[in-house]
Length: 178
Length: 257
Length: 188
Image 1: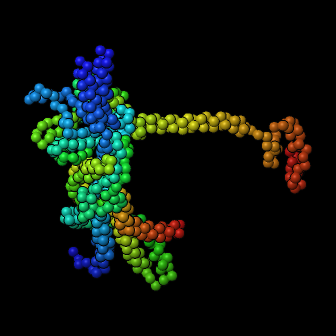
Image 2: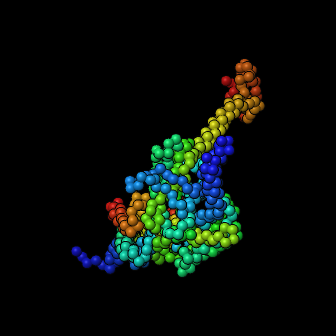
């Protein structure tokens, strides 16, 4: 149980599923926008009264945003593994090409840099891809629920069930252990 | 005697002409056959009230007695108070009767409740609309419209405003689903027929195309000699007789063989 | 005998003459009805007035006055007049007049009769009231929009709201991916 050296800590942190603040910010902003858009849609299509329904709006947007952010993070973790595998060779070549003329750098350092770069690339790519996947999944399920399955339910219940329900479904799907 | 008969006939003639005076649908006095339990007398119209009737929709129902099935029929009842007291128009009842016996009710429409007070020397117009079902199309029915009203003393009156036989005609103006879809099916069949004809024609052209693709004379091709046409012994002779190219050593080798 | 018959003849003749004069008059039936299917606040409502002369004589100086039933605090007049005159309506003919109004408020509204006055000859004044459509409901704009307004604009703005994050992130992903695919392909 040796204490972890700083290098090992840095190495471990680069492999952890936790994302940087920038990535988290992406997730939260995205979740907020995507949770507010269906409210605007329902307001327009069903001409909901603001005075009567603002409580339901607040409730649905909060729960949807939370669930979407959660599922984005899960999805990103899953995708990062896959992307690291795929991008490995390409990143190595990039690093080699970049430091080919630099003879001073040892191979080990190059490998380290390659690893770091792989991590960075996989991180950003998995963030983008997870946002895209989660968004499209949530939106299609929400639209199917709102305008086909629950079309005859009163607008307030329709909004709550379709947004929170589909967000919950997406969150559940994102916890798959692939 | 002759003069008296002439006078009698003239009197009868006048009565006949003026009793059945119906101008433009305006009926002044006509009693119905309704009876009540308190009087033995029939309930009739009040002499102080003048009523008129006019179809609004269909507009030509006033002249031709035709009504369209499946679309609403709207009419107006005019009530003119010629007396000195108020009248209260209570309701109008419309019904369809059997054309040969107006006592037999075929269909009773909802009463048009008005409860409208009409002051003396005033007139009021009341409207009513009813709907003839499409299944009655082609039949002639008796349409009877009665107006029930009361005067200020509470005396009850019923006035018949329309009492004629009308024919219910089918409404052809709207989009007929059957003919519309029939037209669509014929168009589809036409397109199918064109497609089949096209297939048939292309098959025919393919057959002639096969004939065209049969081997065409192309002349000699390449540098190869076609040995089929040369008899075998000449080939053998040419092999022997042709000068042998190459070094004398090869020639010598050949000669010794 | 003859005298009795002459008497009968005279009575019938006088009576007939009386009956004859009874029908010689103009009689105008006034019909007031809304032409629009739905009355919605701040949307046009069309009212049609029909005057039908079912009498035998022409009706002169016919006026329709309906200003009292559509007060200006509740209705705007867009087109037409609520107080009109017609010089003469011949017997057996009809006249229609329509007015376009705009209700300002929603709720129940009682459509009352319009007043029609006309003369037969020069001095015989008739005061008539048209048919009244009765009580009707003026809908709120929101209720009408819920059912009849076009909804595609809301769908388009919804897609526009959602597109930046979704499509944007997909494009960024594609950019990065194609960059590395180029590297992989370049070396091979």
